[in-house]
Image 1: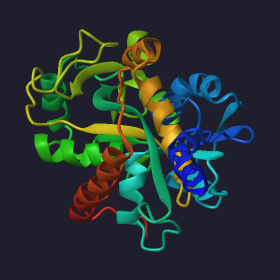
Image 2: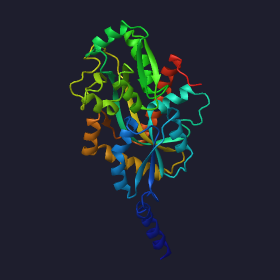
Image 3: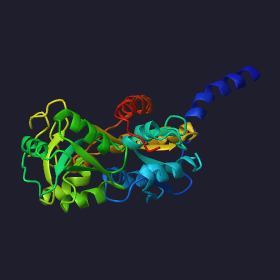
Image 4: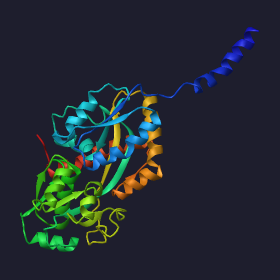
Length: 321
């Protein structure tokens, strides 16, 4: 009898383990966006919050904390309890760029943060002021070369992907450009639209509405395919600048130490939402693409970007020290 009881108990163990409830948040989840509203990071976060709230059964709220090249929002995340209740919508320019530029950074991308889900990936678009007398990329390059030192280009902050894009654009074309950093893509675009800045290389999601309204000119998409929201805008290869391609990604991260069941649950829900037709269509209309990635894929991507993007920044001598 005792032997049969032990056998029955052993047989029941797998069923008991499988019946363990999945991680469930105990209250509202806060998604910190380290940029002002209106840019590509904010756009990526807002694609997911409603669906994630429905999936988890709790409110999911966005907290925009722009400034200090993303460090204000990132530090707030790193210092939050590692319980799955606080997430960061991280931008690869901050994740890989800031550690390469700042020797006194108060967070480490691989030690202090853990990815939980990819939000969007997007190529960059080459946008110019409507006051620039060029309607194609070739025309703009020729026009800019006639004005050495007279072309200003915007970025969402020193060391951001837009900053690096301008450096790479100058190298690829021989155009002499001057960097003007802003606190986010939205204020930068306002100055491009107003004619105070000639050039901005950024993700289409933040500029597409202005381009469709004719308030900025979209000259090319720096990727392998055209953007769905700007189907008439050629790729850089089609526009005469082959090899100039630059991608951005926006992903959900959590403070390191997040319980593994929480990380797995969040990843499963975010992967499911990334394949939702409505979310995919909204992302494509904004010039981006959703991507369902596993935790192993996210870990590998984050580590590779920190190394490779950091090398570009160091070789260009970009620093915030």
